[in-house]
Image (cartoon, rainbow, N blue to C red):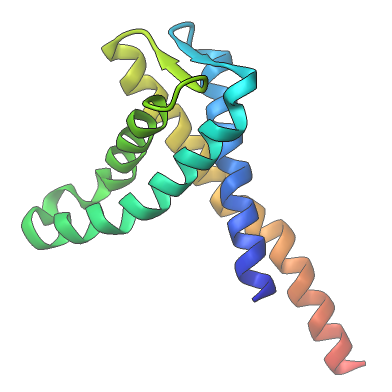
Length: 132
């Protein structure tokens, strides 16, 4: 249960970081500070629901595009999050594509690196307690 909560927290943190990095790097990507929490929660929820759904569809109907599933689900999650007022606003098509790429890269790296940092310490501490 603790491991699940840590992974969920890491996912929300990486989603927030991805959105913040996109707002800093892309002039057409606007993130309102008042709506940051709503944008992060909506994006993270949409991403966590859409990714497995789109993956299963692609696996069933178009296995050649499985590598791009993360980008597609990130783009759709950004679109859904932008529908809520006071959060995300994107100016043009190119910014949509670049924002999806930036957010996907940041969340992928964070989802890969942060568990190594936080969950390894937890496992190492538990292993030492069992041996000691």
